[in-house]
Image 1 (cartoon, rainbow, N blue to C red):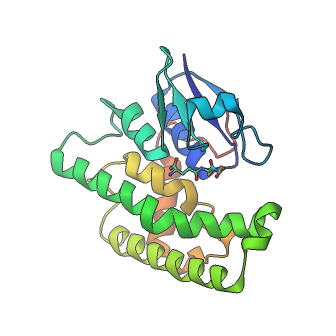
Image 2: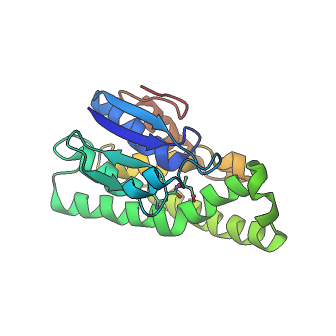
Length: 203
Ligand SMILES: N[C@@H](CCC(=O)N[C@@H](CS)C(=O)NCC(=O)O)C(=O)O
């Protein structure tokens, strides 16, 4: 059976759990966290020298890090990875967008505000920058979703899973999602897609 190492409250770790739930695939979840030091042990660093979660361990012991790489690997051959080359290119486009233009602001702002150990990093400048850049990312999503139901082609894909993970909790980072009605309608569509589970779900 596959194993996912992760933190329950992390959106990056929610992505592969949500995908596995949708695929109906069993897996083992091992809770590790930077907050209790368990991602800095020698055993964990031997598995992922970058010390981050999520981390996927295959049945034969091979390992795969980076949430969006894990999504692409696990979704192979399923309805959640577009077969059409252009639609697949769009999925890649939005996965890279999520990691470079969305997660560093929307996820980080939530962490700065809600994790006590991050409070000292929550300077006014950092909060202003993450607010501005996060709203810019939400604006890009709003523009796309005003004309499209999903991010890569006409159907739900890994791109929607990746962007859902932190967008649905953007309010906790101080973002006003009511300013983005098409994003709100898309969040409802993602929740309505078969096999949906919430961020606190574990196998
Ligand atoms: N690009 C990575 C980012 C992963 C990431 O930031 N993980 C955080 C939890 S959300 C983490 O492991 N933090 C622990 C640390 O930085 O020590 C991915 O998408 O998997």
